[in-house]
Length: 192
Image (cartoon, rainbow, N blue to C red; front, top):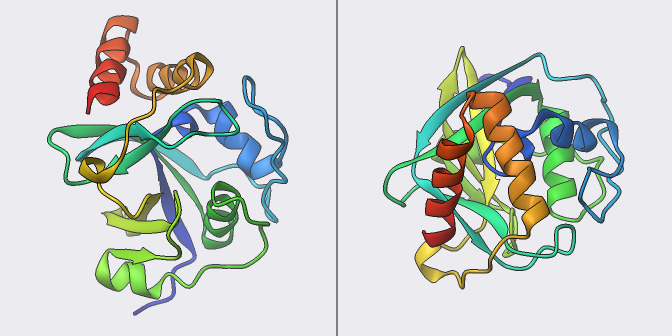
């Protein structure tokens, strides 16, 4: 398998908003959140970003200490499509973003060979510790992380207003959606 230096990080929750995602890269506290992020070793902005949809859907589960309500998770087995925003970043940046999502310190570069070969790898049992490869775009793999459990296995937890507002801002910003379409999408995700 050839070495990979750039990947598309596929965001489907609050990181669809560029300013929110920038806190993972540059460090700091996102608006409406209760956690200060250390940031990545390489704080270079993404080389590109693009909005599209992937098969599956999002749902809200577990309780986030950052937002005070349910977190968004992606399940490729859900019916429909999930609105996403992908950022072209280095493997090191992706590794550091994943570490911060897993409440770990950034600094260790992930070995992506297994997820690239098999499409899925579980790094641990917790939220955002399962890496998924959703294909490729422009020759670079599309990678995201989610929970190891399915939507059918999860107990739903309603998201906080601040979290929903951040996701809504990201969807409007990246997909150009109006308020009605954004509200309908998030309402459907809350019922998924």
